[in-house]
Image (cartoon, helix red, strand yellow):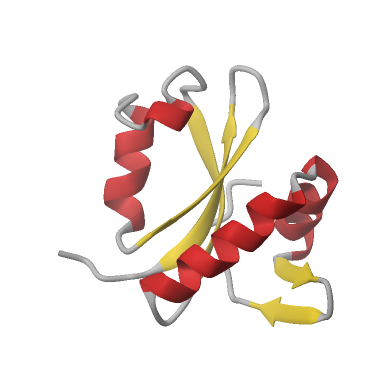
Length: 102
């Protein structure tokens, strides 16, 4: 299995809503979203992968995902996609994006 932990942002092409998630295999997880196998995005399909930020561990990915979701801000998510950087409070996380659809 491809072990590549990271945080990703999807956007529904149906209603333009965003979804933030984390995984250790982006290819598999994206396919699960597209096929409607993920409850949170089942009715948002089709979705587009806007950005993927690789991190060292799945635990780190889950922590970053939680912090982004806690903000509940469409503007923040759009800024992350545009700038290809995650800035939360006083923390500054700068990742190279592996995939960006936007």
